[in-house]
Image 1 (tube, rainbow, N blue to C red):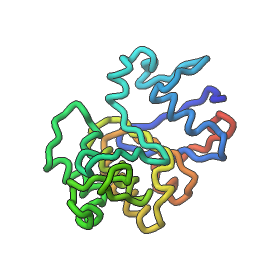
Image 2: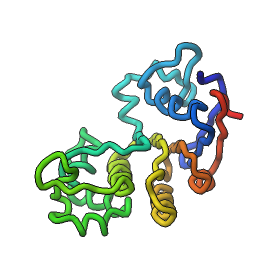
Image 3: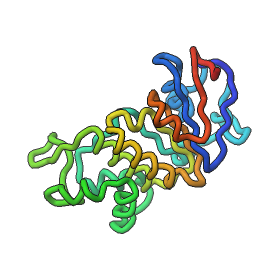
Length: 204
C-alpha cells in the first residue's frame, strides 16, 4: 500500500526511484497516470489534485514507458508516430526522433528502413530485440512532446554500453521536462539528479 510521502521533482530534473520488488514503485507510476485512483489521500501536481484534471488532458501531458515496451505491429515510422496521435506525422520529425533515440543504425539495417513492418505477427514482418524495441519506445517519447515523463525499468534489456548511450540521449529528451525513472539498476539511478529509495510504500 502506498503511504503518504513527499516526492518533489522540478522541471528539467530527473528523479530515480529505487527499491525492492513490491515496494510500490510501479503502483506509484500507475497512480500518477490515473490508471486508478488512491483509495485514501491525494496526489498533487503543482498543488492541484490529480482528480481535478480532465483525464484526457492529464494523459496528454504524460509520456509513459513500461519495462516491456509496447510492440506495435506496424511500420517503424508508424511505431514512432503513434507517440502523438493528435498531430499529423511528419517524416522529418519522425527521423529526428529516431536519430535522437539512437535508432539510426537500426533503421538503416531494416529491409525497407522506416517502411519496414515490425513484429512477426504479419507475414514479412521483421522482429526486433527487446533492447531495440526499447529504443523504438524512446523515439516514440521523443516524438511526443509531453512535459511529464514516467519510465518503469526502461533500460532493463540493454547491455551497459547501450544503456549509457540511451541515458545520455534521455537527458536531452528530459530537458525542461519532469522525469521519473523506476529502476533496479544503480547505474541508471546514478544518472539521475535525485534518488528516492522506496520501501513498503514509503519514501525512506
